[in-house]
Image 1 (tube, rainbow, N blue to C red):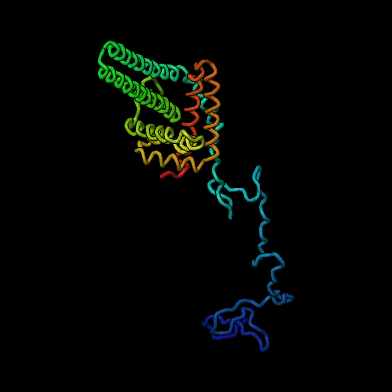
Image 2: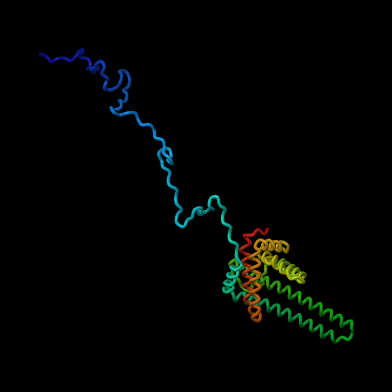
Length: 317
């Protein structure tokens, strides 16, 4: 018996079996349409609804990080490097203290004591030489005038002697002004960290204005010497004037104005540095005046330090 042939016309390709009625196609596709995704397996229900975030929980399931504790040696509210604490002002710089100025002045004098002593001695020698020459001239005038018999000539020589004495005092006063300015200039150079030599006691910057400032303050103090308080007021308001004339090359009016503003901006420390300076010079004078070779430059160094610390801190212009 011959082999049993499959249904269909001989020579035609084999057709797939058609599903029976009521039985779904295993591929899940309808004839003529693309196949669809298979249905979910039995027992799989609908997906659960999204959960609401709990108390203190961020949406999306993320839990907020705990607050960071301040690090080692850091206090709450402390500023991070480069800024002030949030909601607070930057700390106000500490005002320079007069006592620190004297401490620094003493150390600076010990490091340059020979230069400061020789500079003062050089100016003292100039004052002595000028005074001796002037006294000799006045004595010669007096001797020559005493040998003249005429009354008019004698009066003329006497008047010349009085005028010469006044002029000698003025010359000594001016030389003393520049001697003090020389010490102040050397002190300012020391404060700025520059090298100091004896020549710096005579290389006075802005000499005309420095001399006029000192003369103006000296005349004001002399005219008010009949009182006790007013010369002290002149000393208080004018204590920094020479330093402004030396350091900032200011004129008479500007230097005195700047000194008044700085003194009013730092009244307590200005008064304290003046009082300590008076005490130091009084102690130096007790040692037959030799002690002033130490006390005077220390005082000037202390005032120069206080001026230098405040000149960029206090508004004077």
